[in-house]
Length: 455
Image (cartoon, rainbow, N blue to C red; front, side, top):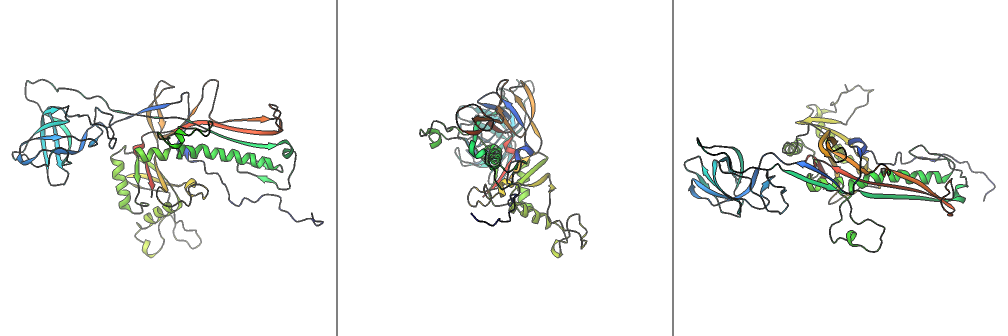
């Protein structure tokens, strides 16, 4: 207590600016209802088949040779759901009469031949070569001697048609929604107490009741978690602590497949530091050429990655060494110089956008070491998938959120008040409880078109 009245600033100073970090999914995705515990979708396999690590019996000038496929040596066989690196048995997709290119993996030679017999049980087939000398080299089954791909077929006059057929190849993916909750509680007495600080929040709440600020910050924090949970979520592995814990019967035990997890598992990972030279982006472009070849892509970056891209593009200016002359400015002494870029084109269009989530010091900002995420490349546009609710093919963004909903229950964003204060009359608790709930999962379609940049 003091008999002298202090000179007070009633309005709270916003020293951290806008503290929320959500906006990423609103920019690149959409939200759609789902009425199931399991969301499944199919993605196309490749049209053509390429075997990359095949063993050849070989020898000196063999004009007919046996080639053996191995586990994990295939790029998307047309009649199998095997993925590279899965450890599953390869199913052969080569038929008699097909012509193929045989290329030595050591880069010494390339041959062309025709398939004369196929042993499906042992994943082997015999090739007769078109050149008289035939194949030279080979170290036998179990080795990675050659890469092969089919380019056509050849048959004699009056013969039967192609023997055998190939089934269309689909990859089936799935994800499960998780329930996200939060709550704010204030006693009735504190609700009736006025403060001398005029509170303010990012969503416009104002007044002299302090509980308004805490309630609105809980809401803003929950909004952020709705997005970051979709970014960071991972599924609980079998026998993991989360899957087997018995301490609490309230917490979840299954997890979900977030964007980072999916891209790390099924997408492209750049782990050699930030790409800060054109040759680095040439490697990225070469990889995108082998995937969906999406014309427009957005790179969401942290601050250092953004500066690296700016410096890389500035260095392309022929006058860059003698001064900062790039951009749309004419170096007027009274005009600000723009040292940043919003995008560039090299094979594809790349747009750069700062991602606050990666810069915020209370989230991923400032993290260093293994696994640190510096950026995420997201293809723009949409893809066609089968929608089980509509019962037909529909256009969907590559990234979109599915929330649980039916005719009687919408769990996209639920909020309700309980207690006996603040207008609530649901219990004898002398307090107001504001509850928040959402049940959702993110669908990352065509993860092979995404890039994650991390250490």
